[in-house]
Picture 1 (spheres, one colour):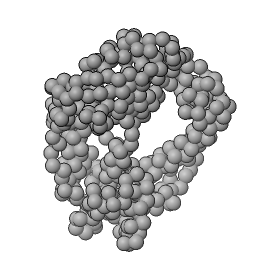
Picture 2 (picture 1 turned 30 degrees about the vertical axis):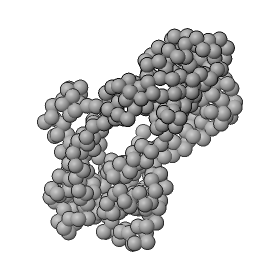
Picture 3 (picture 1 turned 180 degrees about the horizontal axis):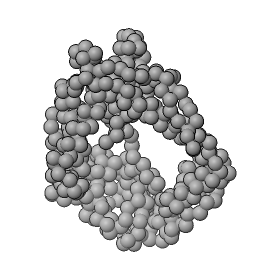
Picture 4 (picture 1 turned 90 degrees about the vertical axis):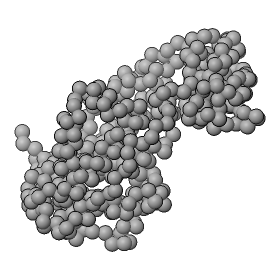
Length: 390
């Protein structure tokens, strides 16, 4: 596991992932509002208890005098290799070709004829129980393979032989053992109103032309030349961001090497270790895995896994101690007003409301995230770029 300041923003990453979790998922064919109550339930989606109780947060600022743990070495004016952010025409063409090769396939839309088994039908549907739409029973622009068994019995069969473009009413019944997560649906009568928009026809080969550009950009760009110009700007912005990240990571590695750590912060190491294990085990639960099955899949032992985790926790703790040392040496800590302003910025960055941030995360964790950002901003201003050795 790599150390470096980017790795240390573990709490910020958790916030970021929480924000991502609130976004709706989309695919190339469109987005169904939700189909969980219509599709056949899989074992991976069954509710499972959390792996363990989340450990109480520990901050490097909770510990005793920082001088007991850290002796700062050189940390300002660190020299790093200059990095080019130029984008060549060849790089743009490579990116275009990559997008052509990796773009999801497109298909002709067949709007005449009837639905047959094996067809991929694009549908809109609304499910109602006792005349009222129910949660999980509505979807739009959804691609359904007829005969796949993806939806409840009778749904797909009820579309076979129907005219493309028609709206069909299906009176069905949920199986008695349909769902453990939503037992209120088991055995209940349901009415689905389904509109058959089209059936997928032959695959359209991906070729770099205006139609391809318009398709993959959702109409944001209409010609290859427009998109090529956009890509060049986008690649340049990515190179600038990558160079910035590489600079701070290189500088941080050197600062860590210049620092003397007098003793381990055992309490902090234990917290980081327990928290990483908590997060990891809960991720396994989400994927229907156990630690034993994961270790078996990865071909490693519990002892090897824990040794790697312990090494990471020790490195992470050292970095947090170093951040505290720089905060105190440079008087970078937050006033109350700076903390509130920083939280507003953090809420905007993560897409989590300010009230949710304050209610969901300990104040000490939020302060540490903002302190880490301050240290990074401070160090960026002191870094000295030098020409890379040839």
